[in-house]
Length: 269
Image (cartoon, rainbow, N blue to C red; front, side):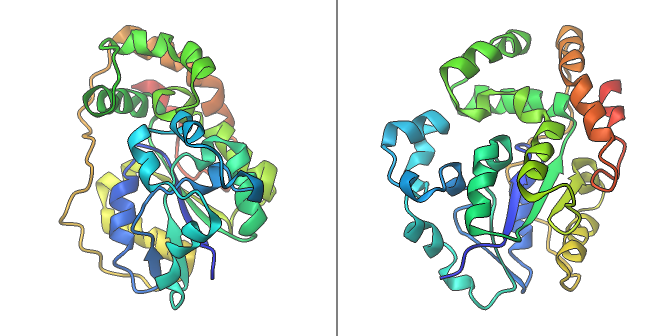
């Protein structure tokens, strides 16, 4: 049985679901019917049988039912993809935990990773709005939800509620460098969410170029899990987030050859 070699690693609320569904159309790409199996959150052999309450701490309880808790179950997701150049999945929180990347390397020595970055201030607001509507966020004031983050991180490892920390992309790319080495041009493709909004087919074919497969005319008529782009954030929350993200955005802007778009503009919203 073959391991996957293609991973869509984030960011949450940055068109990952749409990108995932569109890429399924390409004849050289096979993607798991479960987008986010979260397998490498554990990854090491002795960790495959962890108890159910640990899974509930790491993700939404209703996702536990589809998480892969054994190597056999995980590999079975790709059993129909043996004749494809790429077999992939899209667990968007692997990059948030260096341990998950370390676990991935135990089994996948030369992966291809795709990381879509969205302005982290906007991403935080959109994620909070989504969680408030769909997944149990009780705090109805965005600014207060931001202030709760450090306390929440101490009590729970559930990354969807870590609205700020999940947007520290520079730190997360550094996690990948720590595991796979500093030269990532053949391993990691970092894309701009804004480019997805402007031209989805061009965006998807940038991925094809990275994967060294033929360009393709994707049908992008169906929208998937759209989060909207008309976002209004209060001034107090903006000020707080700009202070939080400033150093990470500076780090990101210095990653030449990995980041090929202007991330400093994120602080100008």
